[in-house]
Length: 213
Ligand code: B16
Ligand code: MG
Image 1 (cartoon, protein in one colour):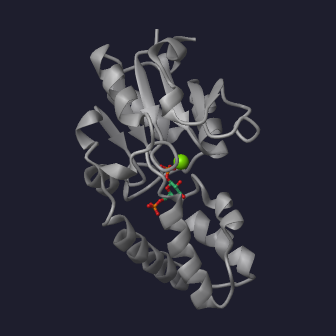
Image 2: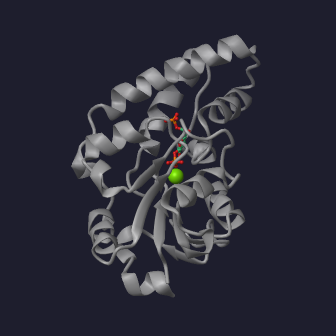
């Protein structure tokens, strides 16, 4: 039986990709190039610095490390301003209900996010208390597809990886979960997340029955 569920944040519980996009586009525009929503797909689940490197590659811009640090900081300040206005209306469909069901039957709940802003977001949307363990971008040294974030989650919960199920919207996150020896439910499209053991379009499709299958 499943003993723990580990949830990615951006793209599974909330759609913060739209705020990341606004902040990255603002930075691109300042640097003199455009950044499309399609380009933004490449940044999902990717760490802040790796995201910046992808953005600069798209714009054909080369910068030294110090300047990159500066720009990443600037983008994050804009992003933090945007997420400061979030509230519980931004929780994606089915999330609260599914978390409540898990809690009722004693399945442990963890967060496994690459974001350094994860706790701010959970507080804003009022879901902080639902999580037994929170592993975020401030706890990890290796980005997804490395399994570190999920292994740390399982360890903190004292649950073996084989009894964990991960919920992920990004291909790199699905790969991370599989290399952690966990089962994974993709949240999004089957075409993109075909490596996952099961795929739902949102948590509204999840039930305890489906979790055990
Ligand atoms: P931050 P997740 C990821 O969160 C996002 O999907 C990704 O777009 C972002 O660059 C990354 O967090 C880092 O976020 O700049 O806030 O530290 O999907 O792993 O919950
Ligand atoms: Mg995600």
